[in-house]
Length: 183
Image (cartoon, rainbow, N blue to C red):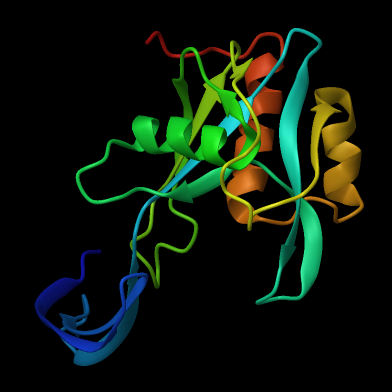
């Protein structure tokens, strides 16, 4: 069943978030106002080394007042390709530059209320180029063995949806017998 959008108006807008009211017609013919949050897309990088470890950041999220491990990530800027944003964010937040990036998974974390897409990339050939230039993201970086990720999720040490999608895709990517699309 398809909903039809007849119009959209702004309720609130900043450079980071846009709250909109949509005039929608539901499949049964009823019309109503439906509020949506328009957000920029997010680019995420899972950097994996030769020892099958993933580079993660220990972060405090003040909105939820929680600490957890996250993959490096950030907003895709206007006119920027998601892969370029993923590489830029990895370097800014960790000091590691990807040699190559390949798409790992795309997700829409809350498609019923927001249009933000999360693009997760994988790099297996990142090189250290210096200290992180973004000083407000994290002061602790670690290469986490992929074999420990599941237990970390179970303990609630990984809670960010973008990170969860990324590390679960990494684990599937490593699983034997998984059919992978050709690039």
